[in-house]
Image 1 (tube, rainbow, N blue to C red):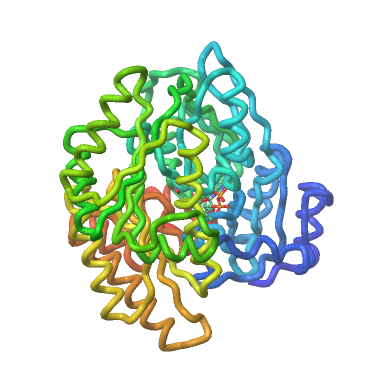
Image 2: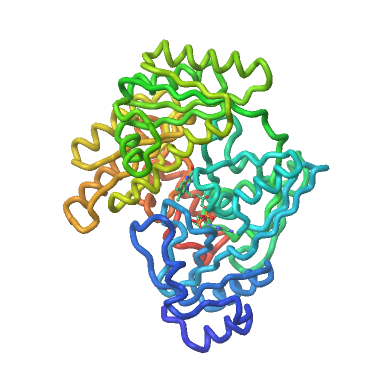
Length: 457
Ligand SMILES: Cc1cc2nc3c(=O)[nH]c(=O)nc-3n(C[C@H](O)[C@H](O)[C@H](O)COP(=O)(O)OP(=O)(O)OC[C@H]3O[C@@H](n4cnc5c(N)ncnc54)[C@H](O)[C@@H]3O)c2cc1C
């Protein structure tokens, strides 16, 4: 439906001209997140509110005229969930960035556009820690993290975003603003509505504020890098660690991933290793020494050819910088389809072997990194976007990897969300009854289907 000039004038009057972008040259930057698949439309306008009341005004305008809405944080999503809809309204929360720390309740009250890194910094000033740490933590927003229930590197010990949400302010599809939870650790009054919005990818409401749980800062961590001759031996070591140990981070890179990162930014990684693990312990005092020795023993028992240990947090960070460079490094090589399939940890070896087989059969370059301790992998499918055959093969491999994860008792998405890229595989994971319940919830909260249609559900 084309939006008329009169309707847009109404939007400008209700939200404020300084908060609305209308010309395509300015809205272009809001069309895509980091996922180009399956494309994006041109929005009729981008609203950049500064207050919850302005979000409400924009939503009411869209509801009145039947115009679809795409909520947007920092646009780092990897599933196309923030990609614009043709003629729709994009609401970017990027200018709502306030952060307030309350050390007495160990909470942070934040606006959705605050970057994850800024929440971490503000908490650290009070000796506190906000654990969820997507690799993109320096560039992604808390609102986006909540909407995707983002994970990250330290979730293996500290959990994911939902574990740190105590309260939410949400603008509903009809423009009402509700407050759920707050600065209290325990609260079981009514249905768990707050958790329903976490991970709902902008399809049930727009998060305009959150109360986050903070924890005391952990002790400094020690880091171990272990090299293995094969992917299988590295994966077996991860499974063994998962049985008895509780490291604060267990990351995996396969040989292709190591080489892509080395080509992109020489970091001195061993290009000949079949698989590489980066494992951390932040256990307090003497317990750290014990845990690191146990981690090293497991790696050696599973055939690690070399182990390097480092107790200096800054040098440990350098290893992680290599792991975090993976996405930018693969982006530089061609078009990308990014997966985040996950399986129960004991099935990790089968998943990694299956992905390698799919890569071979579809003649597609698929380097893999993983938050291995969670069984959550990132196969990045790299292909020549200008070659129709290569694209077709990559899309077939993309679907097959998700089917494999489901067959292994896993998920099509461990942390990035379904977005628009994985929507075709959702029903295969949930099954018809769970899909019915999902649709019923969606239509109860958004009967006109205006909140992020085409994404997540
Ligand atoms: C280099 C790189 C590394 C990454 N590593 C990780 C990782 O380790 N773990 C991980 O989980 N993710 C990772 N991601 C993916 C991405 O950063 C996360 O999904 C992040 O949570 C998205 O936040 P954002 O602010 O960019 O949201 P956006 O991309 O803007 O939006 C993401 C989704 O949330 C919705 N949304 C955004 N804000 C709101 C709001 N206020 N209310 C309602 N809905 C909203 C959007 O509609 C969309 O569906 C990575 C991305 C990149 C580019």
